[in-house]
Image 1 (spheres, one colour):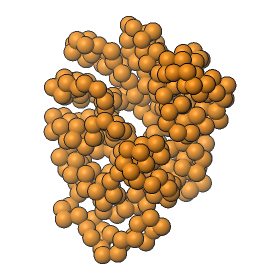
Image 2 (cartoon, helix red, strand yellow):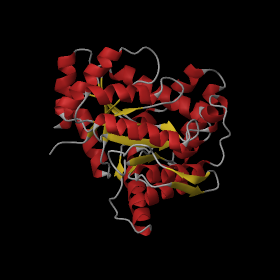
Image 3 (tube, one colour):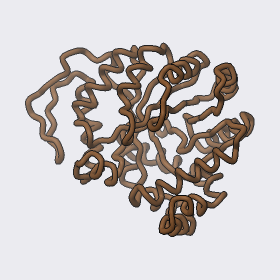
Length: 331
């Protein structure tokens, strides 16, 4: 049985667009489930998605994530409806609130109230996809003129995945979303977290398995394991120490409070000290780097925890090696 594998796109630094398109076309050909384009304070997601939509045929395409502040919900609906038309109905909407560091100091928009805003975004996007008159009376948006999109969307519903962390936002995910994009949940805790999400879905009157869950961390097929682990440590250190309180609180809740405090103290010195403060057990719990076989074993462990979709990264420059590795991962 094939595994649902996803690939991600780099949002920062140098990018060879021809190589990117070639790789996603390979992923498309070998049966990879989806390609996800992030957006933070680098490249925008929608331009890249338009390129990929035009150059692929089967692979689903998603945002992981676009935030609910820098564009209005109607603008989001326009973007996704257009891309869904261009791709022949292959889009996935990945939404998150991001955090005050990015929203207030990059976009210049006040961060509050994130949960209410997320809920209203989902409602408004869904209304416009159904081609219904947009009349919305909310705490954030009051839209009463009854606008509709001036073209018929390919689908009357595009799946919406929410990136959520705390209890209230995960509850909202269970109530209104089609998928969950969890972040920084250690593997030993993943079974309980997904089971809790399923219970919330049932409590909301929905089927237990109505939501697809993407794994909170990627597996990396690589021969340079030390380099991959160092990159994982750097990412953890950055998000814990420099991206507000959400990620630090998340890992503290999952039993890594001492590690979080050590990493924060490391930042008092410099980024290198913070990265070196990330313990090996936290790297192991939130990521995996190694051979194809080791990564498949990790994917199986994630699936046993309730994960439906598995992000992967293949560290291979040669297109043939990249294709062969993805083929093995898909199974």
